[in-house]
Image 1 (spheres, one colour):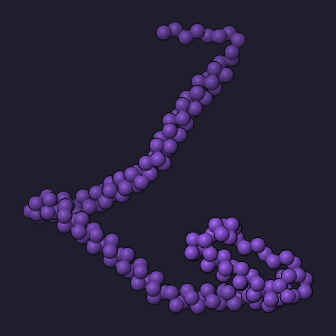
Image 2 (cartoon, rainbow, N blue to C red):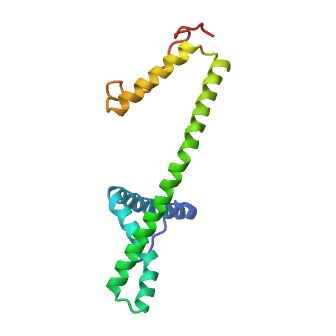
Image 3 (cartoon, rainbow, N blue to C red):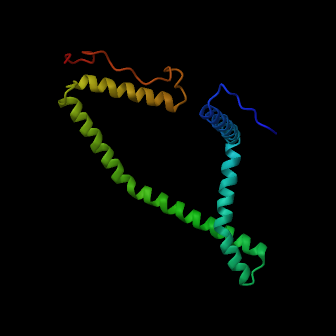
Length: 171
């Protein structure tokens, strides 16, 4: 097939056009593949986890097979061993979190006290009444959102009280 040269179009522009449409075609294919992957996300994630587990457990199955264990039994043993390892890691993580919870609670309480002190003595100089009003609004909002009543509150965060409201003088 013979390519006709257009005398009015410079060679650099023809090359740029050829590269551009190829890049657009690649981008379109990647976009379509991404849309398909997002629609099939659960399946893609499950398949990825299955492939990862198969790749991780295959050497163990091969070793057990070399030791004379039937392939089916080796597969079941490797799967059970993998589940035991995952369960052990999860148990270790849960125990670590439970053991660290008192320290985390103490640190959170200390941080709340620090914020309270800063709000009272810092540049905002909020009164105790203003702080109490804020705490009450946040508590009410959290209660309604936990009970599924976020729609009753409009689903929005509590609005700050107007300046000077809450029983204290305006800064």
